[in-house]
Image (tube, rainbow over all chains, first blue to last red; front, top):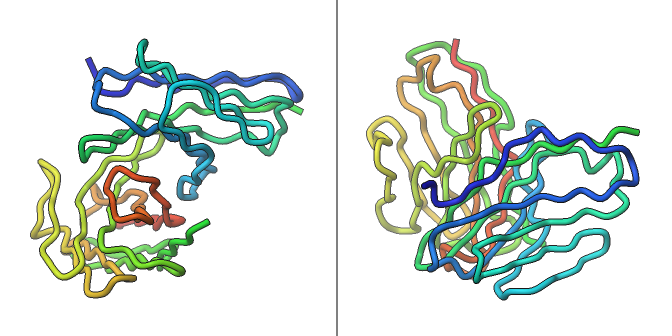
Length: 109
Length: 117
């Protein structure tokens, strides 16, 4: 089993829809959970950072962490064409940082 | 947020030549920086951890003599791809944690696209 599993997609949604992304992990030592957005040919940009189970909201973005199930999610409300990008989950802890493969999202106008 | 820059943003070189990529933390000091490689539609693959004032730590399978890393100051790390070959063509990205912890928030540079002919 890979340390971090993320379905690479692609995921196509119409503008205004809710985008739902998720990752699962196997290492219980992970304590920090992050979501990055990466546009084509650009470096990843930090979107959300959390270290506890529950929800964290920032504008149209909500990050959800369930440590008991080893499952994290990212929700994007009222999706816009500018949200079209690859979204990577990342997890850190015990001096390790692991990334998911990235999930390509396309928001269709 | 913290800013990390990379230079150059893209480079094309002939097979057998060496290429140097710079990574700078612009508004914070970074005792540790990380170098990643990303192939098309793949995730980030950690190559090495760059430590200011000491030797870099390389991931398994990464040739340290081929990918030379120098972290000479608290704001600059360089990656030199020596004797580059077409299979080294990739997107190279550096990152730095603002707190110094390797597992804390990483801020990434914009990446350098290397094409070896």
